[in-house]
Length: 215
Image (cartoon, rainbow, N blue to C red; front, side, top):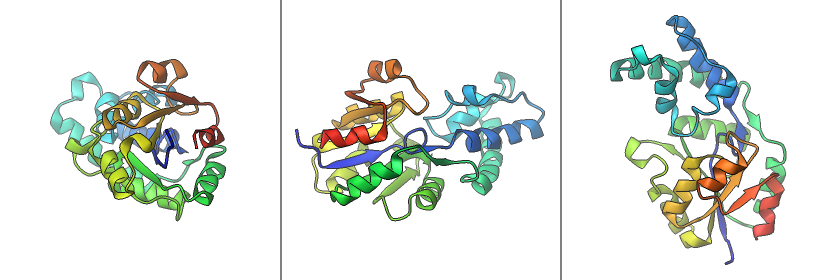
């Protein structure tokens, strides 16, 4: 199979945003006098969208829909002001993107982070690389729903099976499988090699430039 395009997850795949996300949520928890969490704990809260992260971070005694929505709004306010404060690209990502671009391979970002924040982070750290950049607009379209990923490949005029889907979580591997795309797991993000393989990864990357061998 000759691959012709790449869809990337954002958090844990292209950028390490763990500290900015964790700091924003812990700020809200501290304001409400709730227990905070370590970065290691937040590593397993990331992947299903920030609203889901908020629910996981809140105490079980304060986890109603009203609590979640209130804290989500608070968290987003804090995070929006600091979403690129500590966030940076993983080592080797810029070199990988430059190589893909030099080969005229279309590349996209598809994240479960809110759409405006996905665009803010992607465009700030990686200007003029990705088309399109898609984040979460409605819960129904959230990964592992494959519809947006398939839409991206169709707009490129590339078959799903000719598309690489690169991510660091079970959600990404399931999205790739659901879209009939080739699932590529990265081990520099928030999950282990063993977890990614168990969740359907067809290829594991230890370093970003290893992706080029698939072309």
